[in-house]
Length: 248
Length: 339
Image (tube, each protein chain N blue to C red):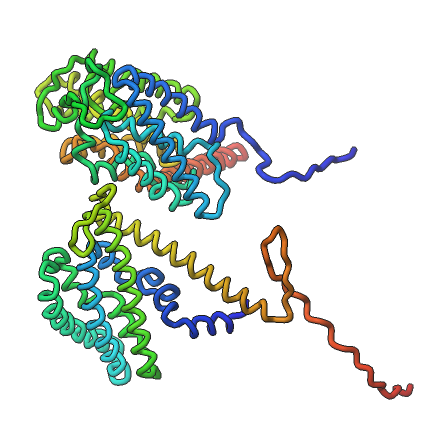
């Protein structure tokens, strides 16, 4: 396997990478409780995404500063304090925007202050890390979290409550059971399997496209399925220059 | 002397008993139960069963295709799941509820864990629990058996005469109004398959005789339940009557045979099976005594399914200790003989 090609693919599709390949929820298993218990409606998902954006971005920037000046144990404490402060600020913004969110999210609104993604990633920033990659990485993480939260919330709100963004819509069969956390787990598992499948397919497609351009591979079509087979590298051309005879 | 070696693909040792034969045994006994449900509830019971089987098999094929595998409906596992589901529900249940339960049973409880033989939780119990959470009101409204007019295949606006099940009466602390003979014959409101007590018992005997279900687990389970009911009766009746009522009401007998008896979701060793049966009996009775739903059996089954690995480990540990002791005794005897 050519790892350089995979690296190139991931660099080229950084947003796709953040959403699929390095999705903090699906791949790293971070912030699962918020998605499983909290993402039961689109409004909840929106509230959690806004909160996550504010908390994660600011804490990551704070983490960049603290990683250079403070030891690890103190860094974790300072970053948590920053994220808690940001949670309070985000709550003040989110509650007027979505009035019912305090009741529906409950303690998860406050637990965002110590969400696994922010605490783990902000404490493990490298001292040599540059500002721009940290910002884009943090944005990608928030986007990945929001994508999963919105997808699961959409399905659960539509099938479980028969509404979309609080507006009643016709639904063939209302399944209240989708709103319980157990089915949040199941849906997240299905989404994870889907993401892995998609990721594998995308990677295989990119590798195939690259291999098609490579002259060392040859195209073989068997039963109308195209495969590529690696050719053994051609033998080096024979040296035709005459060597002087060694005298005995 | 020449040695003939023939190259053949695995498996090299075959047994008459395989997934297909086990499932066919289950299908056979379930068909008998369906015959009884036809007698009590009319053709709607059969149509519900056929619909559930069709949805289960279609979901099974779809899930197998999604996993890029070749569908194999000849193992009959989806058919058994599809046949079990409506039998745990009332005859008046809407078709959509059965379909939702069948989809969840196959697509959530079976295939994500690896398909046939790998599922951690019993698919039929999972499907029923999902339906109980989503459609609780429809799932616990039981029509009277042997009505003057049989239930129409499509209910529409038809009126259904509902009755109070003995499980619900016991849940409230009352005494069911049905006689024990009526209950044994299945002439009382309840889940359409689970009320046929004598038929289910006959099915158990057949399955034990065919070695599809090992006797240790059901015996331990029913003995524990009986002991619990004898010691702590829920209704104001004699202790023996309490045992009979507990065994015949609700889904206890049916679940003990078809849900707990599932060979995939039970421990492997005999000793583990006994321990599992005893623990399941206690959990089921605790669910009945302190639970809010009148049918706690499928929930208890799911809870116990999650602990099967523990019982397997316990069984292995006990057997390894016994083996070690035996070998030590054998060594001692050898030393004594030499001396």
